[in-house]
Image 1 (cartoon, helix red, strand yellow):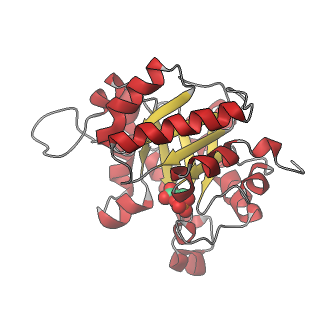
Image 2 (cartoon, helix red, strand yellow):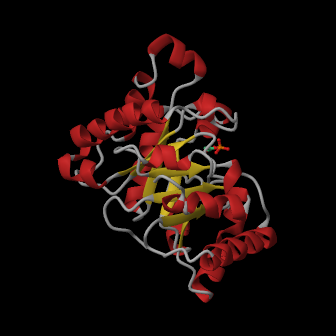
Length: 263
Ligand code: PEP
């Protein structure tokens, strides 16, 4: 389910939460909640990123009930197949109708010591398999103090995009590490400033046309109370949502940000 240029994208990263049975309950509730609220599918793209073990179940549900959600995985291997115990190939994700795959999430960088180069190799692997990588970049609190907000994410994205074909279909997520799960989101102005710089990186690496169509998301303590303020910014095209994506009513309210007062 590839979507046209700059359709707002609200993506729910479930992280290591919800087994496949609870995944069904959440997807169904989210679908009903959006339908009941009169949400017009297509005005905003909705993506769900469950754990690997849920993907087949969620794929089947989306397909059987004709639910207009895109499916994504939370990571992929740089390898195609072979003796890589515990890893999951992009080929397998493509077979499950995944459209997207998150790469470079700060939790992978921190707990699995993934380097910018590894994340670049994962971007290549995603593109090879026809998956759209959601490339996460962001600065830690120490980075922010030492280098300001944009230097680290800009550097991370430059390496991640190295050698990708011009015009590659990607999504970028600017996620300040200090804002993830902390309840303390960046300001919309900071998000805009960094997202504009990230768009310039996409232009330099993949071409002006790709930069124009690439969705750049903000992530870090997004909730229904603050999403509209981010979406007012010209270079913020959506959100990568962690904690709030696990609560159907709250995630639906984020998806429906266009109905919030004053937007
Ligand atoms: C995330 O981990 O991608 C994230 C944005 O988490 P949260 O929304 O919980 O801050």
